[in-house]
Image (cartoon, rainbow, N blue to C red; front, side, top):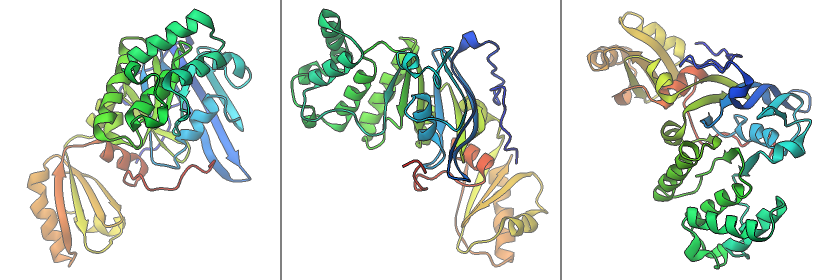
Length: 343
């Protein structure tokens, strides 16, 4: 299994940015250490092109939120470099803050203020005043379909409306970059799909560069031009969703056993079957990649039965981001791992 980071930002799709003028975000060897040996970030390397939607994909505890906090000047790294449109965000944070908007996991909306009041306050914090501020607030309220609720207390808003207000607040000062930290967590499917449309529009029609973190595989697949799979504070692999999935040819056979077996046992048992390209065991699940899943499944089941391995279920599917994640990290993607060590 190849877990190497590509320091030149060259993913499986072969995309490489050749000059810094192409880049909205450039991060090199970013490290965040707690105590003597706890690394929230461990040499993070990646770049984001202007106008791109770039995703950080990984479970809680991977380092996604810590990286965003450093890039948005809310946390100091132990070492490394962050450039936002060629501005050194670590040494010149005041200058960098003019370039980006930030929507955190926890809503910044004041429930005891109206939607309009929230936007007015946010605008004043960025130095906007008078008619310029008023016009910008109206523009954003209309943009996010909040005009009818503009003068209601925001605590009466639905979850989707509050998240739209969060987005509008992040855009009040016309930033070039928008950082979104798990923007759709807690939203129902309809509100989540609506927010996806909004984010896509901001990037493709307004030219905004978007970096988002997510632990929803479907969100990364639908939204991101490119994504990085992050594990233990490092970029494990990066590329377009289609290229990452396309790198894994054939089918994925998932066999759920009644009792755990080791990866060594599985490989030893199945070594006689041809056309098996990968065998990975995670808990009670055995994952096998092959060009002919339907043809190989009977042989796989026959061998497991001969070895007295009881099977609960078996499925065949085309490679997904789940399988990409499994291939590069050695374990399945879950949403229940530990929270960031910085919390």
